[in-house]
Length: 436
Image (cartoon, rainbow, N blue to C red; front, side, top):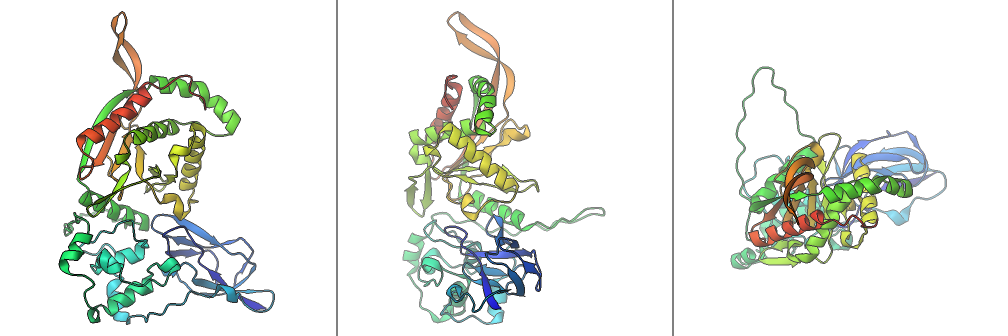
């Protein structure tokens, strides 16, 4: 018999750690090749880790709620044969671990009141745990850049940042105050103590689950960072409704896929972004990063009431048919907890379909580090005034509100409003002969 170390697999660019949620087998249980043995969680995505070999779990190395690095052993299996998987030894770190008191002080719950808040640009790949430790310890981005990471491609791991914190008092300041101020974002979130809430007899206290805590933290952070402005427009989508009604049965028969309104909305948004590329940007301190790729985030409600935003990568390179397939695939996997970590990364602009809940309009929060988001309302039949060659007439039309929230630091009303108007024009003038 031989030992086999089950390692935490790679989970996409920028994801270096994961938290163990639940072991699906116990020590002593037999597992077969490709069996899912443990559920793990990253920033947003929950996923399973399968075993590439058959054998018996003889030791679980990472217990529930413990954090493991990519490439680190999480369990030991006993398998047929001789010798172990020496090629897959754990990643060694050269830094010494801080004492238990330091770790306990750093790893307090994220909902504890913080005295300050630090934001990081997209230039550093930080896992959620490393980021939270940096924020709690008020470690600036410039200071993080002085830490030599021992992870994949030199990325900072939990052990790296804990060792840095433990030795922080013995290290010289990496930069002068003036230089550090210049390298940090122009706007920082302000920490406000939470109000004390009283409870009455019969009130039910429901603890937030892990995802809800992350959503809450991200939403507060986004509102603190970006000054939101929202523009509204009402669009006549009668042609869109007619076109979909004409093509949906044929498309489903041909492709085996449902044809929803979402690929049409995404197509119009992509065309408008191409008209106004300064909507497809992020802010890094005093610099504006203009994104080459157009990656559309798609806010998706989950059965448990939480929210996740899978990303349609390179949406500008997809046809209507390709968009429909990508959207259906992401929505299905999101609702069935089958998304990969990379499926939720890299969005440059986001769309939220509040109309799916029967809402006329909404004022969505801009996901960081994006600078804009569009909400699509419900399509409703209404009487509308139409201009004809014989004069104005009143007709029943399919109307829909759209709202465009944008970051007023870099997107002024003219840019945000014109971009929204272009989406309106593309939808209102939709060609009934468009091929799919």
